[in-house]
Amino acid sequence: METNYFRGESPDKGWGFILALAAMLLFAVMGVGVDADELLQSKENHIDIPGWYFYLIFGVDLLIILSIVLIYLYRKSGVLLFPLGTALHFYFHLYYLDTFLYSDVTSLFLFVGIGLLVILPKWQFFKGL
Image (cartoon, rainbow, N blue to C red; front, side):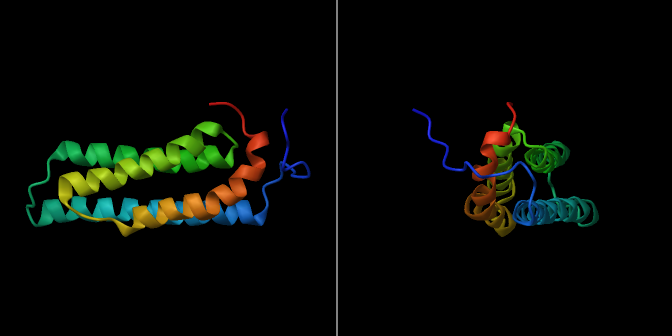
């Protein structure tokens, strides 16, 4: 028997939904800023970071931003890709550069603590992968 706990929920995107996505986007853009700063510092200070790393990390940044857009468009794949992309971003920084990014940790906290609070009631309106 299927129980619909969010029976009165409408498919409209309210302020809570938009503000939660904006906060997630803010921290995703902060991660892009950290990556761009690393790229500039590696060129100016001749830090030995392989060139392929920046293709990898900017690809993950693009995946994170794309997932936020997919969440806004009510796609289930965005809800799955956001924590996966953010965790990958965190892991790549930790493994390859030995840097602990608080922006990624905060972004995951926002997703779990606030994002899912506004995403779960609208889950019935999300389309497939």
